[in-house]
Image 1 (tube, rainbow, N blue to C red):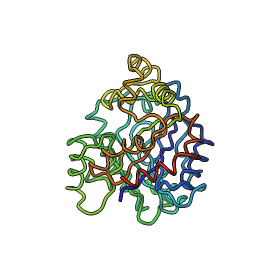
Image 2 (cartoon, helix red, strand yellow):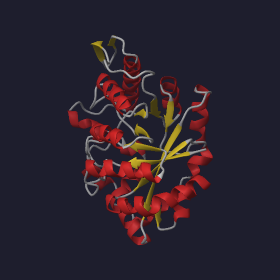
Image 3 (cartoon, rainbow, N blue to C red):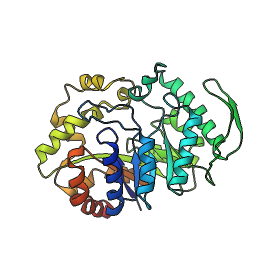
Length: 321
């Protein structure tokens, strides 16, 4: 049976609000919660970008049942992989084994801020391979020294290492990333409902593994308001990840999406009060074989009402699919 999650969208909500939403999402019945890990919002109108790891530490204490996950962390630019390994181990202990470390090769939007430039996709994938090797090596609590093309680790040890380490999910988008990252990860993350990715992943992981996707929706009693909010805060979504990975600032996303029309957004994101329509937007991921689908309710201003009035009935419809 597919598991349905709730997205802690750090780009559109402040830290205290995110912790409150996480508590309510667990109470409503979501199976897991994923947190984005951003230094900047996609668009200025979203207006937030708290530190995801502080939020996750608080969420680990404010919840007791739901699985937690980063969706996703880039362990190569803004963070050194040895530090990511330590952070992940700590969250795993705080959550008592509920955490999965979701990793990806990142976006310029969040990684260029440390002043190290933004490498091409081939180099980013090479860096991610090294980072995952380092994180894996450190999970056991042993002393690790590593000398790679991009990263060095000198006599490092995770002193508070959870038994069994931390499961790793990794974002893949095609055959190249699949062949390189699948042997290093435990679970698959993908932004498109691609059945071929699922089958390719399962060739590397014949035993049970999670295939995790994400679906944005814009619920509102007024469909026009739902479309307007989705256009205002999520029109960046239509650029595709080949574009999204390389734009450096929210202003750049504003400029790149200036000709995206509200009807364009409404054509790709389910908007309005019809819960059956909102639920159906997740069906492509189910049909493709994904085991987990995280829902993004667009906009902080409707988040509370969504959790209070809509999330429960929507979950019933999603599970009925």
